[in-house]
Amino acid sequence: MSAETPVGQLLERQDADYRGWWWVGPPRDGWLEGGQGCLVSGDFAVRRAWHERGRPALSPFDGEGIDEAASSPVPGAVLFWPKAHALGEWWLLWLCARLPEGTRLQLVGENQGGIKRVLKVLAALGLGCRKLDSARRCSLFETRTARLALDPEAVWTHFEAEGLSLASHPGVFGHGKLDEGTRLLLGQLPSHLPAQQPKGQVLDMGCGDGVLSAWLARQGRHVCAADVSAFAVQATRRTLAANELEGEALESDVYSALGERRFDAIVSNPPFHQERSIDYGPAARLIEEAPSHLVPGGRLILVANAFLPYADPLERAFGGFEIVADDGRFRVYSARRT
Ligand SMILES: C[S@@+](CC[C@H](N)C(=O)[O-])C[C@H]1O[C@@H](n2cnc3c(N)ncnc32)[C@H](O)[C@@H]1O
View (cartoon, rainbow, N blue to C red):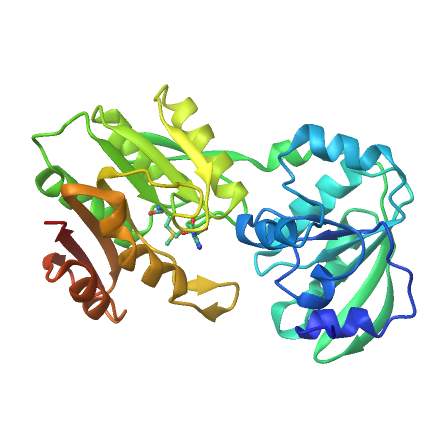
């Protein structure tokens, strides 16, 4: 199968033997998924696609799995430069900490996504760099891993919002500040969550840094937080721990890891971006499948930019809904399962 993405097509035309390499943070691409080497990705949906094809796929937070994979020789790694440059820098630190010094490290990305910035980033870390190729509006650079004084763990920070300490990591939504839509949603939760079930199970779908989960757990709710991003799940666990709160946080592509579980309420500030493009897919699935993950009488409460087209899917899934807050920019919707 031929490469499907511009970055995949640039790699495909290299006269390189990528057997045993690590593919770090790539997009979905059938050429990669049908090829050689091991995936390392924070994206649960991409890892699941690789697993379904019988291919090795690891999260950077899977300590034992990573140690085991790194214990056999890894000839090199290709880092797909992410939209969030600070996350790209984290991956560089992480790869230098995990792979033996001198391992070949290629960096690939779209020019409009800022791949050329890696030259400055590598120089600041004292890593040399050479350009290997450019085509399809993408560029490919190569360096080698080195022992760096910076610890990837040091990238984690905390900030305060709503009286909570929130963990922050590059690439996790709202990095370092509370989203205005989330703030509007929080203002509605006391009056719109089923008060008769204060100890009920609430699902925080697309938990990000865990602000909604921590806020709900502080109210005494049993919280299950889910996100497709391993970075977000780690952030939520750190947020809960920093506030001495209990809760479960798991990786899931919308409801994929939740089986038949049903909740008293689902709260969400749903995603509508995938890297640089708009993608309503996860939000549409979140709404369509919500009734089958709610107990009778359970509610879906979500906030969205006012321009997003969520009224029709809510009407189809629930047969009706209310707009319980609207500040012109954001709307909070509430829909009840009969
Ligand atoms: C708008 S952010 C909201 C984050 C947090 N709840 C808040 O209010 O600040 C949406 C979140 O959905 C997550 N997400 C994106 N696609 C997803 C999917 N397919 N399944 C689950 N979560 C997803 C993103 O990683 C992101 O953390």
